[in-house]
Amino acid sequence: MKLEELKAQIAEDLNIDPSLLTDDAGPGTIPEWDSMGALGIISVLDRNMKEGLSMEYTEPFKSFTAIAAFARQEGILTD
Amino acid sequence: MPSISRAALARGSHEDPSMQAVIEALEIHLPERIVTNRELAERLGKWTAEEIFRKTGMRERRFAARDECSSDLAIAAARKLIASGRLNPSGVDYVLFCTQSPDYFLPQTAPIIQDRLGLPRTCGSLDFNHGCAGFVAGLSIAKGLIASCQARCVLFLTGETYSKFINPKDGSVATLFGDAGSATVVRARDTNAPAGIGEFVFGSDGRGAKNLIVPAGALRKPRSEATAVEATDSDGNTRSENDLYMNGRDVFRFAIVEVPKTVKALLEKARQTPDDVDYLILHQANRYMLDQLAQRLPVPKEKIPYEFEDVGNTVSCSIPITLFRLQERGELRSGSRLVLMGFGVGYSWAACTLTWV
Image 1: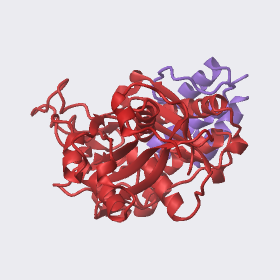
Image 2: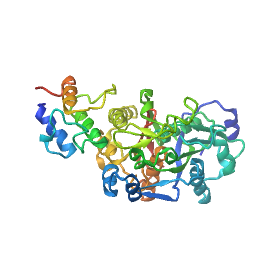
Image 3: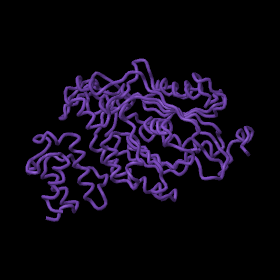
Image 4: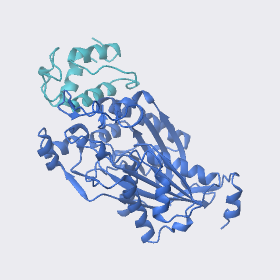
């Protein structure tokens, strides 16, 4: 999956325009990225992982950059 | 029909694999006080009533009165069974009570229930502290008591008053949870037909203990002036350590990881396919959780009932409430094949197959 595709899926889940998901975008800058929004982001990542998410602990995502880093680490992103 | 005699029961320890445990009757009870989204919206000042509904799928929930305990709610449910002739108190061999809000640290609540319901003094009794998986866990205990011929009629009660742990200024939990009680008669039935309470799959992961917890008030951290100090988190929710805390993100993650795997494992163990399942009854956490789980489960969404709009998340009472309402609406028939799955606090989870009789 390409970064823009992941961005589009997360933006759709948060019900925002994808252009708002800049690298620094996070819970502090996007009102829709609240506690419910955080669940949606987890759901999008889980859906795109072959084996689904694991139970290993991860810090809450504080920015879109952190989401992208996680997605690369888990093999979701190919670019 | 052959049956195990009281004398055989008294002998105790033999097992009878042909003895089935079936759910014979079920009742629920809700406290009177209704807490609406409008009331919460006015108090929290964070979301409108409609936004709360959109986020949770809940319009109202019931909160117990100040002097009303979980045992009162469970007993009220049991009294409905007695009043309608579906339960003869003198025939109960064992009473189980599942709650996370007991009357006292000690004594345990089940003997108090035995006395208040007029159950025999020869009746065994057991409390167990279990949350959202508690109803399925209790069915496993009841089935074990029956299969090992220790009991023929188990009265299994659940009762929860999470509202007493909730800080009214904490919207993350105040919008979700409601109080309730349930009473289920689990009885021995001598049959070789595949009926009643079937296979089980369980799970526990104590790494999640901190994610749904009342940190203070028991012996690890007794209540003190320090634990009563309130703080407001980054989402604007205010609570102290005496109050219920839920890390919704990690609990959600746990559920989407474990629930689909467990349902799959249960169906394999029971040698069933998704087509065999008439209803998959999940713990009624909230709408978002169930929507997300439904996308990941092998049965169609229309076979996954939602029963929380007017009661909220009632913890160990959510599955019996769902069963009761399906039955009331005539949607359960004799022979209906069900999968029940509870999951949550602990973390702990439990799933079972059940054929309705």
